[in-house]
Amino acid sequence: MTQDERWLTRYNEVKEFIEREHRNPSKYRQEEHDMLNWLKANRKKMNADGLKPERVEKFKELLALTEVYRRKNQYE
Image (cartoon, rainbow, N blue to C red; front, side, top):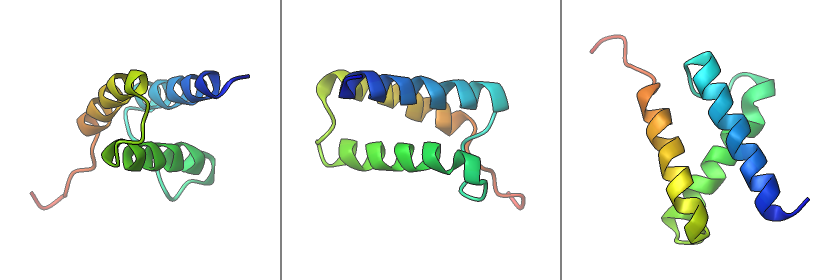
């Protein structure tokens, strides 16, 4: 399996999780921790211009999806 295939597999896994659960991966649940770390690492790479150009567009779509289910402050 190539690096691009692994990246795409993880991308699909995270996207399906968010669409199925209607929330973002939690840092408090052990089974979701890998997905959260993958999101954070790729966000950091993108901000440092280290993410491959063909991945940037797909990752921006995923970030837009995470914003839809962003945690809300109960006092707002």
